[in-house]
Image (cartoon, rainbow, N blue to C red; front, side, top):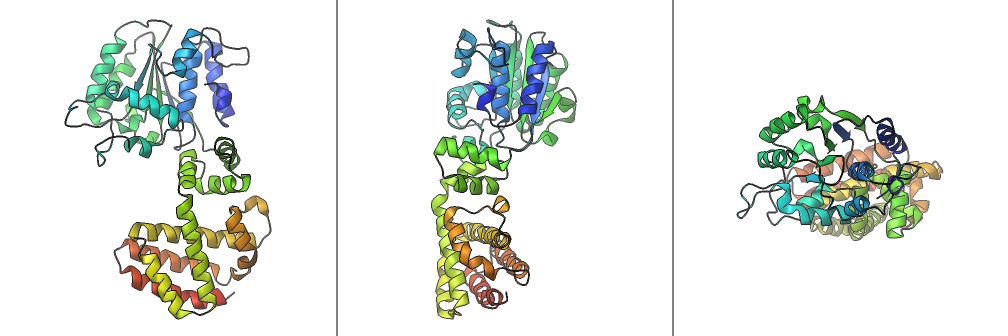
Length: 376
């Protein structure tokens, strides 16, 4: 992998290259920032760059030497991976090596490192993957030997905040008294949850959220999405590529939510009480979790339609289907009713999340929409 394959983060890439050029690579580096921004790809590429035998003049791994080829297959002998795992009936004292083949597949299929997707790969579905104390002991044994094929042994640790207390305390000792040829690359979604004494011994580099255009470009390139649809998905994801990909995977659900929204607004405008009663029953049949998500979706569409009236495409994030509907619908969402509609949606969502009767809540909300949609 090259740095150029990773969207955005040019400042971070420059810092990493400069460390190597100046010969001042810290023994412990902490890349931290929001999930889904490509932090682990940056760490992986930096590890490859450090091991590369013939890096290019423009600051990229050559991609053809023995070390680069090993990194591409995630099998470089001096690169150690540490990541959250789970205990099972067969594996009582789990370490990362017990799941390394699965993790290699995961790094390839989910390069932006979707933790929920990683957790779903385990047979024990209710368990939360963590880094156990057994990991620190195994790591200490492996680091005690010298690097085999390069100047550095590199430890790539994904989500150090998932370490239990015992593991964190043991890792602290390894970082405080590092082997001369060892570099720790820690990649965190939540640096505040890492043991403070570990944080203080790492050189931090913040990796900020991706801008919507970068996420949209990635979706367009990888999935051949329509640029407008990609930008709408990117905006909803708030810079998290994994969230954007999940939104794309949930296209059929979003379409269902859109159809329910359109049906609601038309029935409310027509004052069709019988139709709204059927609508409320249909929405309730989705189940409590989906109902809450539906109201979140509705609030977004109301906000987007309010902005749509300003006729500034740069700040409007609707896919093509939503935009076509909003061309005629947006005029009904104004300063007079937008806040009231969102307030009622918030209330309905909270009531349903609080185990209220969905049919009653949804029908009550639908009746209120009769008044709110006319008050524009």
